[in-house]
Image 1 (spheres, rainbow, N blue to C red):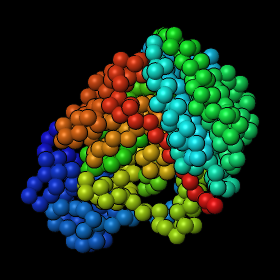
Image 2: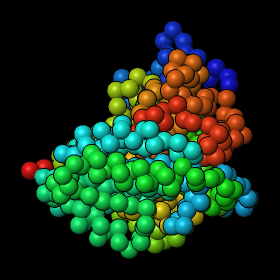
Image 3: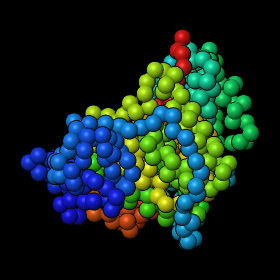
Length: 467
């Protein structure tokens, strides 16, 4: 890349890639004089207003720019999305009798309530001796909720845990309950009954004398079956990728996010699916995504998701532009509009075919939008619960976390890739599209293990009262 970049001919700011004495690397500078109150333009779109006169060549950031977001903007529908030419691609996965293929052969231990976290973790530790053959791991997925939540929160926790159990990477699942919690086992079983799964077992620790011995016997039986499962060639139509960014910086909208957008386009062209979430990080760029909705009906669903999320903010007394984070700003992102315009690059150029509720499982081939917040672990969990077998996670600041499916870390800049080599799976700075797509195929085929795969975490989107 050059030392500076101008993204769009309409822009009045450029990006300094290597930095100067007065402008940090990844930050913006004025291409011409910008007067007080004038729009600041990047990506060919408004990212804010100048709060002072800015001279040509000067640093453009939070000290002289503020958000121009309109919380009451009126939306319209003007379809403008690409339809990629269809291709065929395969990977080596674990075929399932009940949906998409898995990219891992794993066994999950899921607590219905945080009270039994220690039981699940002890079971996972003791069951490691059963990890043989083609089994990729036995994992406990602890969390702090499942009791004392009311209304929608209680429903959401049940829906999300059940969706986790339905992820294709899980060959077998053991639900462990206490026996007196709000999120009781009967509700879990009732929710999962229509799916007619024979790979899920359940027990409450209050109902058995020795919960450790009881659980281990179930896990041993699971492992005896799972260890002989073999990878087979499957079509990309069985793959769903999650699109997520976190710890963004000034390079995010230039390198990693648009590169992942190209990978999304190639996945969809090959018959696969992709899911975009982080609704608050669409604010300021939501109209561009609305114009990609396949039909007016999908546009209306998307618009409602945006408007409901804005109302959630304002009902709590917060402005919708309570963003970017301190780390984002340090990395060169000035306003939420700028962050959002870079964030949505991950969706690529193809149409949006569906809008999913929180905990809802993907149904359509193509790109779907998912209702979930921007928080990294909550959003990544929601993506995986909606059926993504892998999450492509772009970052300019770096993070070691992983949700309960492989979470591939894609750096926006070479400094991070070198400094945190133990976190980063791919450096996107050189925009090597074939290289990243090849790594995706190797990862879903089991030839590459993401550097954070030894970590498995889940988190909930909680909005209501806890007793």
